Image (cartoon, rainbow, N blue to C red; front, side, top):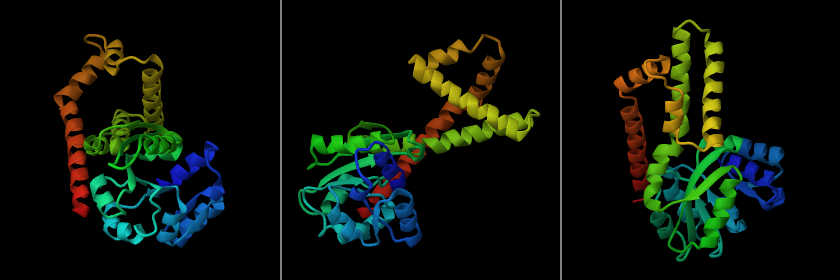
Length: 259
């Protein structure tokens, strides 16, 4: 995710490569970032922390108990700390940094890798609207960013954070169903991908509610009607709800990592 953000920032010409410093424990990853993007790298988190006007925390939530005390002395009080760790509340981050630290929490998703991420942002008690705008500009470079109250970020995690996996699972299932009906798997996958792409494009370009577009292609007693009836009988909507609920709940559990 950090690599995707760096690529997004460089593509907008808002930042130069020599303004960006990335820290990682993996030497091979640092070499890849340095040679591929021309940025500066280090294996010293404290050096990265003191370097940045914006310090992006892009580690697993489980790493925060060690990471935050490590970088806290090095962070400048005028820096914006941008966390993309799932579930870790702002209050837990603020409590382990210098008093008055300006924290913004973000929940992006993996389509950032192809500049189509959906990201929600929430600012901490010391962050300003300008800090939030800076964070929003960063994530707008790799997709679309909105701001929400922090209390909604676990739900965002369960919805759009985990959402790409649900979409991929749906594509797999639809492809396999086409294969079961006699299509070659490669043919079925090509048709499914274009169907999903076309449906999303239609939704975006018409600006219509998805329910109205669904109704537009559903003739009473027709083939689509029969397919949707089978989805309803299988509890399709409830299954999706259960998935989002479960992922949201797990995000809340991860937030307890720091106490």
